[in-house]
Picture: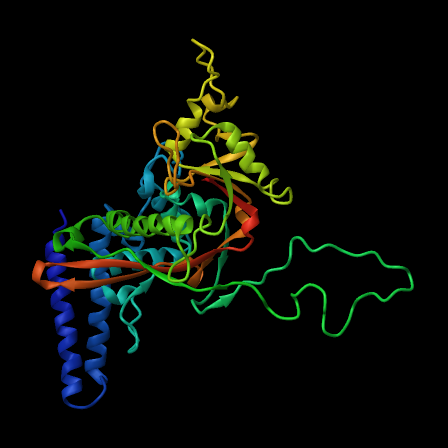
Length: 417
């Protein structure tokens, strides 16, 4: 049986011996050379080999296949569904289909979280030693948290390479053409005097607000666990925090000092009704111009959807629901008045009696007119640091984004007069 603690001791001893060679060279004001350089390279190779053995052991692999040290797919009598076993199964499936370069990136992520900063961290002098999670891993991690991100699922996303302020170009949706006589001036000129764009790049400026997962403390003993669990339980859990916070801001953010939520500047359907009903929802849809209705979706919380689904005809003893989808019992996504219904629990909920004073419980509109700017291609940045006083380490994630409703008329929200 492999003794992982003996392997870790061997790894630490090798690191200490390599450090002594470097310190000796620094003290003598020279570079590593000759036999010392060869010895150092041999030590580095041994450290890497022992590290691969440790992670192979943690993932349940044998030393014969230690080259695929992390997330090695387990034998199965049949195919594995991406969602059947949760995030861990999804990661294993991705690893099985990944090329060597991608597998190395996943190995490095696990190694970095586990404490080997050389495996993945940016060790340049001006760096803080952190690591940007590989872009092909992020969708896999986020897939397990799709219920936390309903806004992103229907909004327009705009990935950018950097986080510098950028102007999102906007062209008029409502500008119309004109009719000309065959010999009349076309209206074309050197200054483009018609629609404001494209004489210059105009539109709202989108920033890149940094969202922090807040650090989580991980005892040293946890790092001896499976490498799969390191990514699943630590990186996945911290990313879930960010996804939940982002959805809140994309829904209700005030803008200016944070992302702007789509509700903040959406047009209002002001109603004098006391309680929400299906007619108000229909009025809400028709409060949006016809141009944006074909792509429209309703958005509401679970509580609001449940209330609306319980509405009956009002006839004594009649239990027939007013809102009844033909395929609702078959697990089909819900729809209302022919439009999809997106559940977003960051929206206001109606009270038990359906009243919604000072609330906006339902929205409708074309969410493609709500733009989410995903800075640095939406890649989270993970940073690990030691906490010696508690015999462990802390891990924290960061991601940057912004959002803005480009066309307020495209989305409408219910409000009480």
